[in-house]
Image 1 (cartoon, rainbow, N blue to C red):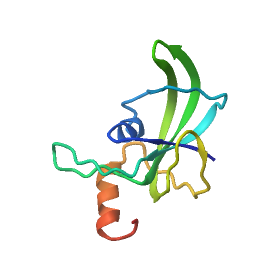
Image 2: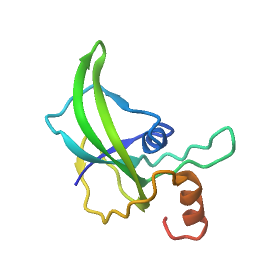
Image 3: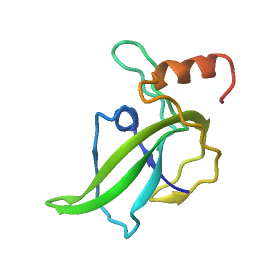
Length: 123
């Protein structure tokens, strides 16, 4: 499946359905399902929560790409949270072969990530 690495907090915002566009300096002919992966850089929120990093967070549907002034606006639809899985991200769209375990739409992926990390179930 195709995947895209995104910095935090934007990866989490996409997983929560709060961010529906992604701005890039490049475009792709690909349209379809993408796995959204949080990049390797740990980020702590002002609430002292560690945001997920180095994991696949959700799938989205890349519906269209629109040319904008300084690049391209990718239209993302239908985010579906997945059980966080450790990944080595890459630049641009890359292939990722992982088993997807879908979670309920209202799942708190930040708390789940921190629980899994503390139990050493992901690295």
